[in-house]
Amino acid sequence: MCAAENILEKHSFDIEGGNFSNAGTVSTKIKSILKQKNLPDDVVRRSAIVCYEAEINIVSYAKKGVISLTIRPNSVQIEADDEGPGIPNIELAMQQGYSTANQQIREMGFGAGMGLHNIKTYSDIFDISSEVDKGTFLKMTIHTQPAKD
Amino acid sequence: MDIAAIAKELNLEIRSARDRLENIVTGGYTGDLLSDVMANSHAGDIWITRQVHQNIVAIATLKEHAGIILVNSCEPAKDTLERAKQENVPILVSRLGAFELTGKIYNLLAKDK
Image (cartoon, rainbow over all chains, first blue to last red; front, side, top):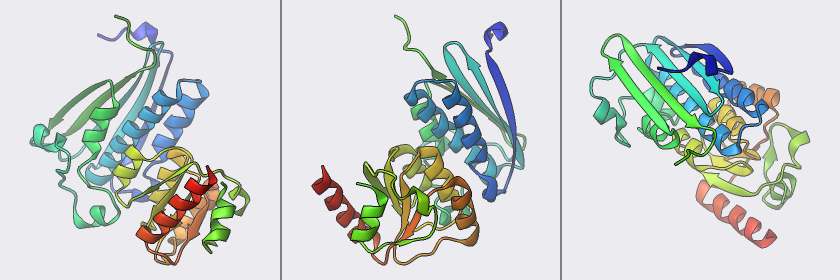
């Protein structure tokens, strides 16, 4: 039930699964968009971290995916929607250190089982849903202004 | 302290972004797990690693690191160098291992404060 009229800006980026040479480019673009908006450094930093982890997950596991950025007056929202194997056990996948990454991914320094954990830590609101053999959907919200009591 | 001073002090070889050696180093982070570096390093850090593939440039750019030092004489991959030149990220190479290099840089930064 998002108030669509409150959207200030929306951007979407396609991500190709398995293409490690481009990994990080979408996060870099999103970070520079957020920097141009003069958002607090902490918001930009946390957005970059969650976006990067989501991007790496798509590159590492999915066939393809889309990352979208929605800027509202009080929040930054990043969604990652992929077509891929899905996650059979989300609770397990959220555990720090748990990973299904193959050897090649691990040798590159990815697949440490920290990705979803980092995303949860650095988001104010984190939603995840997944369907096996279909894909995974992540929604990360970062407040740009302190929540009022 | 800038990268040029650290490079001179520790005999580091410069592989990219020679015009950015005046980048000020405010701290450092040592690690090869990219999610760990992503989560725990800071802007202005010098990143010490033995990963040589091009994703290190994306991380250093995103985290606004002062530069990257590869340990144990590891050389950056060709596409890493190309990316580092595009993004203007300094990559340097040390003959030392991560433990020794980290200790030396830690001491240099502590002395500089």
